[in-house]
Image (cartoon, rainbow, N blue to C red):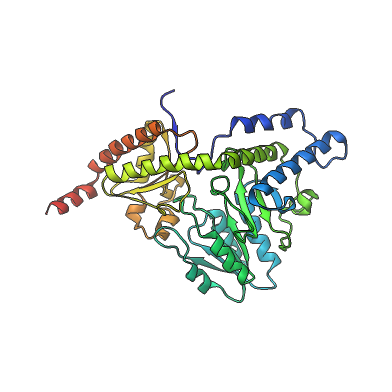
Length: 394
């Protein structure tokens, strides 16, 4: 196998060896159903409780406020749909942003079709919510504010503490999609006034198909999956014991290494950004320069198609993703990039690269060198670039 450099950790991460090792016995040895009454199964119930404790401690929450789900999308759906239903007698207005993950946006659209009103806040050119806009959007009928902790495309971290404070002063529930942020940056639910928080295991070197929803005690949220009495009667279905064990192990690992990882990744991130902006003309950084996830680099290259960039990078053994949605069959560019004010032609030429604790400076330099070559090649094939250069010479 040739060179392989994985820079798409916002999409998913490699499951850590210690996570796999912790999970394995729960497939073949400790395979009892936690709901069964005999000793063989009750050990699994205790193991689940231990993982709940680990997650709660990292968030500054209580163990009975952690509910296991199948991942971030389910947690987002649960938070919005169940809150809307439970607080429908108080009002029918929800506030979110234009740059949320589609698990939030599509759920909001679903609720709109059922009589709820949704305000989608604009963001500034760095992708941040303006607090004055949030305050102005609040109505007497507002029951929920949902703002992601950090954006999955451009990495911008929101002023979550301030948003949570505004929500609580008005007696409004506050949910945050922390799928990209949890395990990357410190989060304390009380300090940030968070009522509900979504997270997913496979974004922090845990397994896929497992996540959780934090629900503050006292929040009136109803069952999301009906059936058995699992998850304190709020989410029915036999627990994914191996997944829960893997998630707890991954959270423990992420918490222990967070400070060192952030220092390393942000250093490499800044090195990559600096080289790209200095050595490749006609490009721009997307997202806030400093208030961004430690591992996120998102750059737009003028006169270049993001899909072509991805294909040519793949040919050199580099895995990344595009800010353009064309890879999913859509001709429209990323809704996030349009929301921060990029025109279509520039948004289409965007590239997201997300690092891990295993990424090296040598790999970063190789990727930037490849980018210089690829962008140059694509621009030389572009009539738009040719026309641009002619106008520049006049």
